[in-house]
Image 1: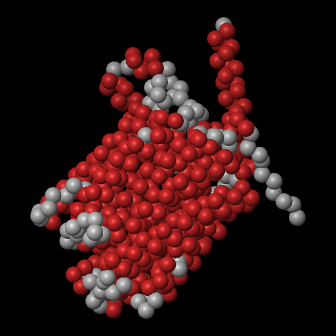
Image 2 (image 1 turned 135 degrees about the vertical axis):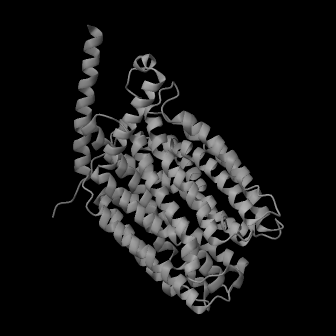
Image 3 (image 1 turned 45 degrees about the vertical axis):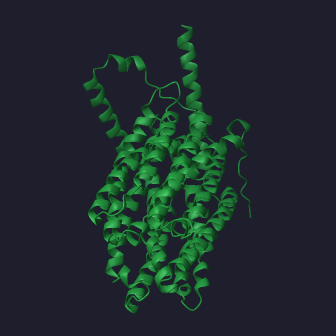
Length: 491
C-alpha cells in the first residue's frame, strides 16, 4: 500500500505570518459584519414588537440588493487600475464607510410605529450592504491571489477562518449584552450602544489589510486604449465584458459544485438559526430571557472554540487526504450533530442544549477553510483556459450565491416560524404542537442540507496532482510571455 506524499511549498510561495495575520483581521471584520445584524435583529422583534415575518423581510431584501451588486463589484475590482492596486483602495474606503453606516442604522428613535422602524431599518440596511460589498468582495479576491501554492492556500484560509472565528465568540453574547439591565434601560438602547462600538472597530481593523497586504496581479489592458474611447463606448465595452465573464464563470462545473455545497450547508443552518434561539428561550428555559440568553451565549462560545480546533485539524488533514475528502468527513459530523439536537432540547436538563455545539462546528470550520482554497484552484484552471485572472468575479459570484441563500433563508425563516404557530406574546406558554414543529424544522432542515452538500462536493475533480499540473502549465505560459515582451522591447 503506497502512502501519498504531498509536495512541499517552495519558499517563494510562502506567505509571511504578518501577511496572514493582516488578511485574517479582514476575516474578523467580515464575519462580524455578516453576523451582527442577524444576532442583533432579535431586538426588532422582542424589543420593538415587529412581526417576525417583517423582521425576516428586513433581512432578506437588503441581501438581495447586496447579491446583485457583488458580481459588479468583483468585475470593477478585477478591472481597476491604480497605483494602489486593484483591491486595496476599495477595502480601505469600504471598511471606513461600512463601519460608520452600521453605527448609524441602529440609532432607532423611540416611540414610533412598526412600519416606521421597518422603513428606517430597511433603508439603512441597503446602504450598509452597498459598502459591505465594497469592502468584502475585493478582500475575498485578494486572498485568492496571495499565493499560487496548493497547500499554502489552505493554510492562508485556515488562518483567516481561525481568526474570523473570534468574531463568532462575541456574536452569540450580543443579545445578553443588549438585555443587560445593569448596562442599559432596555435591549433597544443596548443595540444603539453596541452598534457604535462595532462600527468603530470595523472602520479601524477593516482598513489593515488594505494598508499592509501586497497584490500579485495587475490588470493587463493598455490604459491608453481606454483614454481614446468615448464614455458611451467604454460603458458598452464594460457591459459586454462583464456579461461574458459572468457567463464563463457560472458555466464552470467545478466552481458550481463548490457553490452548491456551500449554499446548502451554510444556508441550511442559517434558515433555522433563529429557531434554536427561540426554542432555547421559550421551550428549554420556559420563557426566561436571561437564562435563555446565557445558554445561547454558552452554545456560541463552545461552538466557536470547537470551530477553532476543527480549523487547525482540517488544515492538517487536508494536506494528507485532500480537500474534497476532508470536506465530506467534516460535513458528515455536522449532519450527525444536527440530528443530535432532537434529543438535546430538554426543559428538565437545559445544559443538554450545549451537546451538539462541537459537532456542528466541525463542518462550519471546514467549509470556509476549504472552499476559499478550492476556489483559488478553480481560478488557476480558469486562467489556463481563458488567459484571464478573475478572482474578483469568482469571489463575488460565490458570495453572491451565499448571500442570495441568506436572503432566502432570512426571508423564509420568519414565515416558517409563524407557520409553526409561534406567538411571541405567549412566551413559554406556546402550544405543545408549536414546540414540536419548531424542533422538527430545526433538526431536519440542516441535516438534510448537509447531506446534499456532501453529494455536491463529492465529485470535485481538482486534486492536488491536477492543481500542480495546472500551475506548471501556467508558469510555462507566463515565462514565454515575459520572454516575448523582453524580445519586443529589445527590438
